[in-house]
Image: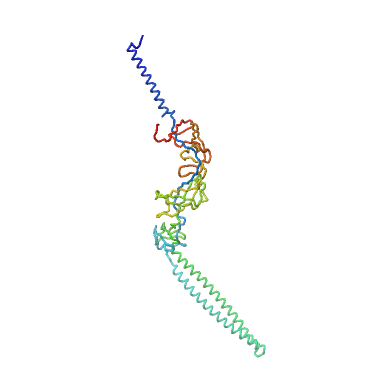
Length: 402
Protein backbone atom coordinates (compact mmCIF):
# COMPACT_ATOMS: atom_id res chain seq x y z
CA UNK A 1 0.00 0.00 0.00
CA UNK A 2 1.35 3.50 -0.77
CA UNK A 3 1.60 5.52 2.48
CA UNK A 4 1.66 8.76 0.51
CA UNK A 5 -1.93 8.06 -0.43
CA UNK A 6 -2.80 7.49 3.24
CA UNK A 7 -2.88 10.86 5.11
CA UNK A 8 -2.81 9.22 8.53
CA UNK A 9 0.21 7.17 7.74
CA UNK A 10 1.89 10.28 6.32
CA UNK A 11 1.30 12.17 9.52
CA UNK A 12 2.72 9.34 11.60
CA UNK A 13 5.88 9.24 9.47
CA UNK A 14 6.35 13.01 9.65
CA UNK A 15 5.89 12.97 13.39
CA UNK A 16 8.50 10.23 13.77
CA UNK A 17 10.96 12.19 11.67
CA UNK A 18 10.47 15.22 13.85
CA UNK A 19 11.18 13.18 16.97
CA UNK A 20 14.32 11.77 15.42
CA UNK A 21 15.51 15.26 14.44
CA UNK A 22 14.77 16.57 17.94
CA UNK A 23 16.71 13.68 19.48
CA UNK A 24 19.67 14.35 17.22
CA UNK A 25 19.57 18.06 18.12
CA UNK A 26 19.43 17.23 21.81
CA UNK A 27 22.37 14.86 21.48
CA UNK A 28 24.34 17.45 19.55
CA UNK A 29 23.52 20.14 22.13
CA UNK A 30 24.49 17.85 24.99
CA UNK A 31 27.73 17.02 23.24
CA UNK A 32 28.49 20.71 22.70
CA UNK A 33 27.65 21.51 26.32
CA UNK A 34 29.78 18.64 27.62
CA UNK A 35 32.71 19.70 25.50
CA UNK A 36 32.43 23.30 26.70
CA UNK A 37 31.23 23.17 30.30
CA UNK A 38 31.01 19.57 31.39
CA UNK A 39 33.61 17.13 32.62
CA UNK A 40 34.92 16.68 29.07
CA UNK A 41 35.43 20.43 28.58
CA UNK A 42 38.88 21.83 27.77
CA UNK A 43 40.35 24.27 30.30
CA UNK A 44 41.48 27.53 28.80
CA UNK A 45 45.07 28.43 29.69
CA UNK A 46 47.63 31.07 28.81
CA UNK A 47 51.26 30.13 28.23
CA UNK A 48 54.63 31.82 28.42
CA UNK A 49 58.11 30.67 27.56
CA UNK A 50 61.06 30.40 29.91
CA UNK A 51 63.55 33.01 28.73
CA UNK A 52 67.15 33.82 29.53
CA UNK A 53 67.97 37.35 30.59
CA UNK A 54 69.08 39.73 33.31
CA UNK A 55 67.11 39.86 36.55
CA UNK A 56 67.20 42.85 38.85
CA UNK A 57 66.05 41.15 42.02
CA UNK A 58 64.43 42.83 44.96
CA UNK A 59 63.70 41.70 48.48
CA UNK A 60 60.55 42.79 50.27
CA UNK A 61 60.23 43.05 54.03
CA UNK A 62 58.30 44.62 56.88
CA UNK A 63 59.99 46.71 59.55
CA UNK A 64 59.58 49.14 62.43
CA UNK A 65 61.16 52.58 62.80
CA UNK A 66 63.51 52.55 65.78
CA UNK A 67 66.18 54.83 67.24
CA UNK A 68 69.75 53.61 67.10
CA UNK A 69 70.68 55.97 69.93
CA UNK A 70 68.08 56.27 72.69
CA UNK A 71 68.85 57.30 76.27
CA UNK A 72 67.26 56.87 79.68
CA UNK A 73 68.21 59.87 81.81
CA UNK A 74 68.11 59.34 85.58
CA UNK A 75 70.05 59.93 88.82
CA UNK A 76 73.03 57.88 89.96
CA UNK A 77 71.70 57.75 93.52
CA UNK A 78 68.26 57.28 94.99
CA UNK A 79 66.27 60.42 95.65
CA UNK A 80 63.12 62.44 95.13
CA UNK A 81 62.34 64.27 91.91
CA UNK A 82 62.16 68.00 92.61
CA UNK A 83 61.18 69.31 89.17
CA UNK A 84 60.85 68.24 85.54
CA UNK A 85 61.43 70.99 82.99
CA UNK A 86 60.57 69.30 79.66
CA UNK A 87 57.60 67.47 78.19
CA UNK A 88 57.05 64.71 75.62
CA UNK A 89 57.86 65.90 72.11
CA UNK A 90 60.16 68.73 73.19
CA UNK A 91 63.36 69.23 71.20
CA UNK A 92 66.28 69.67 73.60
CA UNK A 93 69.88 70.76 73.17
CA UNK A 94 73.03 69.11 74.50
CA UNK A 95 73.63 70.28 78.08
CA UNK A 96 70.08 71.53 78.58
CA UNK A 97 68.65 70.94 82.07
CA UNK A 98 65.85 68.37 81.82
CA UNK A 99 65.02 67.67 85.47
CA UNK A 100 66.47 68.09 88.94
CA UNK A 101 66.47 65.90 92.03
CA UNK A 102 66.02 67.11 95.61
CA UNK A 103 69.45 68.14 96.93
CA UNK A 104 68.56 67.13 100.54
CA UNK A 105 71.82 67.85 102.52
CA UNK A 106 74.19 67.99 99.54
CA UNK A 107 74.54 71.78 99.69
CA UNK A 108 75.46 71.65 103.39
CA UNK A 109 77.91 68.82 102.74
CA UNK A 110 79.47 70.77 99.89
CA UNK A 111 79.85 73.87 102.10
CA UNK A 112 81.41 71.77 104.85
CA UNK A 113 83.82 70.20 102.36
CA UNK A 114 84.81 73.63 101.04
CA UNK A 115 85.50 74.86 104.59
CA UNK A 116 87.58 71.79 105.34
CA UNK A 117 89.62 72.40 102.16
CA UNK A 118 90.22 76.01 103.25
CA UNK A 119 91.44 74.80 106.64
CA UNK A 120 93.72 72.27 104.98
CA UNK A 121 95.22 74.97 102.79
CA UNK A 122 95.88 77.09 105.89
CA UNK A 123 97.53 74.11 107.55
CA UNK A 124 99.73 73.58 104.50
CA UNK A 125 100.71 77.25 104.50
CA UNK A 126 101.59 77.07 108.22
CA UNK A 127 103.62 73.90 107.70
CA UNK A 128 105.48 75.53 104.83
CA UNK A 129 106.35 78.49 107.10
CA UNK A 130 107.61 76.10 109.75
CA UNK A 131 109.76 74.34 107.17
CA UNK A 132 111.30 77.64 106.11
CA UNK A 133 111.99 78.53 109.75
CA UNK A 134 113.51 75.08 110.36
CA UNK A 135 115.79 75.57 107.32
CA UNK A 136 116.95 78.90 108.74
CA UNK A 137 117.61 77.38 112.19
CA UNK A 138 119.47 74.51 110.59
CA UNK A 139 121.67 76.84 108.56
CA UNK A 140 122.48 78.83 111.71
CA UNK A 141 123.20 75.64 113.69
CA UNK A 142 125.44 74.31 110.92
CA UNK A 143 127.47 77.58 110.90
CA UNK A 144 127.84 77.66 114.68
CA UNK A 145 128.80 73.99 114.84
CA UNK A 146 131.45 74.36 112.14
CA UNK A 147 132.94 77.44 113.82
CA UNK A 148 133.04 75.88 117.31
CA UNK A 149 134.52 72.64 116.02
CA UNK A 150 137.32 74.68 114.45
CA UNK A 151 137.80 76.62 117.71
CA UNK A 152 137.85 73.37 119.66
CA UNK A 153 140.65 72.00 117.47
CA UNK A 154 142.61 75.15 118.33
CA UNK A 155 141.80 74.70 122.06
CA UNK A 156 140.09 78.08 122.20
CA UNK A 157 136.91 76.48 123.62
CA UNK A 158 136.26 73.45 125.69
CA UNK A 159 135.02 70.18 124.26
CA UNK A 160 131.73 70.53 126.15
CA UNK A 161 130.94 73.75 124.31
CA UNK A 162 131.67 72.07 120.98
CA UNK A 163 129.41 69.16 121.94
CA UNK A 164 126.63 71.59 122.85
CA UNK A 165 126.83 73.23 119.43
CA UNK A 166 126.81 69.85 117.70
CA UNK A 167 123.75 68.88 119.74
CA UNK A 168 121.97 72.03 118.58
CA UNK A 169 122.83 71.06 114.98
CA UNK A 170 121.28 67.59 115.42
CA UNK A 171 118.19 69.14 117.00
CA UNK A 172 117.81 71.57 114.07
CA UNK A 173 118.03 68.69 111.60
CA UNK A 174 115.43 66.69 113.52
CA UNK A 175 113.17 69.74 113.71
CA UNK A 176 113.40 70.19 109.94
CA UNK A 177 112.53 66.54 109.35
CA UNK A 178 109.52 66.88 111.68
CA UNK A 179 108.12 70.00 110.03
CA UNK A 180 108.71 68.55 106.54
CA UNK A 181 106.74 65.45 107.61
CA UNK A 182 104.01 67.69 108.97
CA UNK A 183 103.93 69.57 105.65
CA UNK A 184 103.58 66.32 103.72
CA UNK A 185 100.71 65.24 106.00
CA UNK A 186 99.01 68.62 105.57
CA UNK A 187 99.29 68.33 101.81
CA UNK A 188 97.84 64.82 101.87
CA UNK A 189 94.94 66.07 103.99
CA UNK A 190 94.40 68.85 101.49
CA UNK A 191 94.34 66.42 98.57
CA UNK A 192 91.90 64.13 100.41
CA UNK A 193 89.59 66.97 101.38
CA UNK A 194 89.67 68.42 97.86
CA UNK A 195 88.74 64.98 96.49
CA UNK A 196 85.86 64.76 98.97
CA UNK A 197 84.73 68.22 97.94
CA UNK A 198 84.94 67.26 94.26
CA UNK A 199 82.90 64.14 94.98
CA UNK A 200 80.29 66.28 96.72
CA UNK A 201 80.27 68.65 93.76
CA UNK A 202 79.92 65.72 91.37
CA UNK A 203 77.08 64.29 93.43
CA UNK A 204 75.47 67.71 93.50
CA UNK A 205 75.87 67.94 89.75
CA UNK A 206 74.42 64.45 89.23
CA UNK A 207 71.06 65.52 90.59
CA UNK A 208 70.86 67.96 87.68
CA UNK A 209 69.75 65.75 84.80
CA UNK A 210 71.07 67.24 81.57
CA UNK A 211 70.68 66.22 77.92
CA UNK A 212 73.81 64.44 76.63
CA UNK A 213 73.00 65.43 73.00
CA UNK A 214 70.46 67.21 70.83
CA UNK A 215 67.34 65.05 70.91
CA UNK A 216 63.59 64.66 71.30
CA UNK A 217 61.86 63.76 74.58
CA UNK A 218 59.81 60.58 74.23
CA UNK A 219 58.63 60.07 77.81
CA UNK A 220 58.40 61.64 81.28
CA UNK A 221 58.77 58.54 83.40
CA UNK A 222 58.70 60.24 86.84
CA UNK A 223 56.91 63.38 87.99
CA UNK A 224 57.93 65.88 90.72
CA UNK A 225 57.59 64.35 94.17
CA UNK A 226 58.27 60.81 92.93
CA UNK A 227 61.05 58.81 94.58
CA UNK A 228 63.35 56.96 92.22
CA UNK A 229 66.20 54.54 92.74
CA UNK A 230 69.70 54.81 91.29
CA UNK A 231 69.66 54.31 87.54
CA UNK A 232 65.89 54.64 87.18
CA UNK A 233 64.89 56.82 84.22
CA UNK A 234 63.15 60.12 84.77
CA UNK A 235 63.30 61.27 81.13
CA UNK A 236 63.62 59.28 77.91
CA UNK A 237 64.88 60.82 74.69
CA UNK A 238 66.36 59.77 71.36
CA UNK A 239 68.59 61.24 68.69
CA UNK A 240 66.35 62.01 65.67
CA UNK A 241 69.32 61.64 63.35
CA UNK A 242 69.74 57.99 64.40
CA UNK A 243 66.34 56.71 63.24
CA UNK A 244 66.38 53.60 61.08
CA UNK A 245 64.08 50.72 60.14
CA UNK A 246 64.66 47.32 61.71
CA UNK A 247 63.46 45.05 58.89
CA UNK A 248 62.65 41.36 58.60
CA UNK A 249 63.45 39.71 55.27
CA UNK A 250 62.84 36.20 53.92
CA UNK A 251 65.95 34.05 54.36
CA UNK A 252 65.26 32.07 51.18
CA UNK A 253 65.43 35.27 49.10
CA UNK A 254 68.30 36.94 50.96
CA UNK A 255 71.20 35.81 48.74
CA UNK A 256 73.35 38.86 47.98
CA UNK A 257 71.94 40.92 50.84
CA UNK A 258 74.60 43.19 52.32
CA UNK A 259 75.37 46.68 53.65
CA UNK A 260 75.17 49.56 51.20
CA UNK A 261 72.42 48.20 48.95
CA UNK A 262 69.78 50.77 47.92
CA UNK A 263 66.35 50.52 49.52
CA UNK A 264 62.93 52.05 48.98
CA UNK A 265 61.20 52.66 52.33
CA UNK A 266 57.42 53.10 52.39
CA UNK A 267 56.16 54.43 55.70
CA UNK A 268 52.65 53.60 56.87
CA UNK A 269 51.98 57.31 57.35
CA UNK A 270 52.95 58.18 53.76
CA UNK A 271 52.38 55.11 51.62
CA UNK A 272 52.20 57.22 48.45
CA UNK A 273 55.73 58.57 48.78
CA UNK A 274 58.55 55.99 49.17
CA UNK A 275 61.74 57.32 50.78
CA UNK A 276 65.21 56.25 49.55
CA UNK A 277 67.61 54.61 51.96
CA UNK A 278 70.46 52.13 52.35
CA UNK A 279 71.10 48.86 54.14
CA UNK A 280 73.25 49.87 57.11
CA UNK A 281 73.80 46.56 58.86
CA UNK A 282 72.86 42.89 58.72
CA UNK A 283 72.39 41.26 62.10
CA UNK A 284 74.61 38.17 62.47
CA UNK A 285 71.75 36.30 64.18
CA UNK A 286 68.63 35.38 62.20
CA UNK A 287 65.19 34.45 63.50
CA UNK A 288 65.01 30.65 63.33
CA UNK A 289 61.28 30.60 64.06
CA UNK A 290 60.13 32.91 61.26
CA UNK A 291 63.12 32.07 59.01
CA UNK A 292 63.93 35.74 58.49
CA UNK A 293 67.08 37.82 58.26
CA UNK A 294 67.13 41.04 60.29
CA UNK A 295 68.58 44.15 58.66
CA UNK A 296 68.81 47.78 59.74
CA UNK A 297 67.95 50.26 57.00
CA UNK A 298 68.83 53.95 57.23
CA UNK A 299 67.21 56.91 55.47
CA UNK A 300 69.20 58.95 52.96
CA UNK A 301 67.29 61.93 54.36
CA UNK A 302 64.84 61.22 57.23
CA UNK A 303 61.39 62.68 56.44
CA UNK A 304 59.93 65.33 58.70
CA UNK A 305 57.68 64.10 61.50
CA UNK A 306 59.17 60.61 61.55
CA UNK A 307 58.32 58.76 64.77
CA UNK A 308 59.60 55.61 66.44
CA UNK A 309 57.34 52.58 66.37
CA UNK A 310 55.91 53.36 62.93
CA UNK A 311 55.50 50.41 60.57
CA UNK A 312 57.29 50.50 57.24
CA UNK A 313 57.72 48.38 54.13
CA UNK A 314 61.18 48.04 52.63
CA UNK A 315 62.16 46.98 49.13
CA UNK A 316 65.86 46.13 48.89
CA UNK A 317 67.49 46.26 45.46
CA UNK A 318 69.79 43.23 45.26
CA UNK A 319 72.71 42.89 42.82
CA UNK A 320 71.63 42.07 39.24
CA UNK A 321 71.76 38.43 38.09
CA UNK A 322 72.93 38.03 34.49
CA UNK A 323 72.15 35.04 32.25
CA UNK A 324 69.32 33.83 34.50
CA UNK A 325 66.40 31.61 33.41
CA UNK A 326 63.30 33.66 34.02
CA UNK A 327 59.67 32.74 34.51
CA UNK A 328 56.68 34.68 35.83
CA UNK A 329 55.84 34.04 39.48
CA UNK A 330 52.21 33.56 38.34
CA UNK A 331 53.28 30.20 36.93
CA UNK A 332 54.21 28.74 40.32
CA UNK A 333 51.96 26.01 41.68
CA UNK A 334 52.13 23.98 44.87
CA UNK A 335 51.50 20.23 44.84
CA UNK A 336 51.96 18.84 48.33
CA UNK A 337 55.45 19.72 49.47
CA UNK A 338 56.67 20.46 45.93
CA UNK A 339 56.82 23.82 44.21
CA UNK A 340 56.70 23.72 40.43
CA UNK A 341 54.99 24.70 37.20
CA UNK A 342 52.72 23.07 34.63
CA UNK A 343 54.85 22.54 31.54
CA UNK A 344 52.96 22.35 28.21
CA UNK A 345 54.60 19.94 25.77
CA UNK A 346 52.97 18.64 22.57
CA UNK A 347 49.52 19.56 23.82
CA UNK A 348 49.94 17.74 27.14
CA UNK A 349 50.53 18.99 30.67
CA UNK A 350 53.31 17.79 32.96
CA UNK A 351 54.02 19.07 36.47
CA UNK A 352 57.70 19.96 36.84
CA UNK A 353 59.26 20.62 40.25
CA UNK A 354 61.62 23.57 40.17
CA UNK A 355 63.95 25.53 42.43
CA UNK A 356 63.78 29.29 42.35
CA UNK A 357 66.34 31.92 43.28
CA UNK A 358 66.08 35.67 43.15
CA UNK A 359 62.82 37.50 42.46
CA UNK A 360 62.37 40.86 40.76
CA UNK A 361 59.74 43.41 41.61
CA UNK A 362 58.37 42.95 38.05
CA UNK A 363 57.08 39.51 39.03
CA UNK A 364 59.85 37.49 37.35
CA UNK A 365 61.63 34.63 39.13
CA UNK A 366 65.02 33.06 38.60
CA UNK A 367 64.76 29.31 37.93
CA UNK A 368 67.81 27.45 39.19
CA UNK A 369 66.64 23.87 38.48
CA UNK A 370 63.95 22.04 36.51
CA UNK A 371 63.47 24.11 33.34
CA UNK A 372 65.43 25.26 30.32
CA UNK A 373 65.13 28.21 28.00
CA UNK A 374 62.22 27.89 25.57
CA UNK A 375 60.03 25.64 27.76
CA UNK A 376 56.36 26.66 27.68
CA UNK A 377 54.63 26.85 31.04
CA UNK A 378 51.09 27.66 32.09
CA UNK A 379 50.73 31.16 33.50
CA UNK A 380 46.97 31.38 34.08
CA UNK A 381 44.17 28.83 33.89
CA UNK A 382 40.44 29.17 34.36
CA UNK A 383 40.27 26.01 36.52
CA UNK A 384 42.47 23.80 38.64
CA UNK A 385 44.75 21.63 36.50
CA UNK A 386 45.77 18.01 36.78
CA UNK A 387 47.88 15.52 34.86
CA UNK A 388 44.89 14.46 32.72
CA UNK A 389 43.44 17.91 32.14
CA UNK A 390 42.49 18.83 28.56
CA UNK A 391 43.57 22.39 27.86
CA UNK A 392 42.99 24.96 25.17
CA UNK A 393 45.65 27.62 24.74
CA UNK A 394 44.31 31.16 24.43
CA UNK A 395 45.90 34.58 24.37
CA UNK A 396 43.88 35.85 27.33
CA UNK A 397 41.30 34.51 29.76
CA UNK A 398 39.46 37.83 29.71
CA UNK A 399 36.62 37.78 27.15
CA UNK A 400 36.55 35.41 24.19
CA UNK A 401 34.41 32.29 23.78
CA UNK A 402 33.77 30.23 26.83
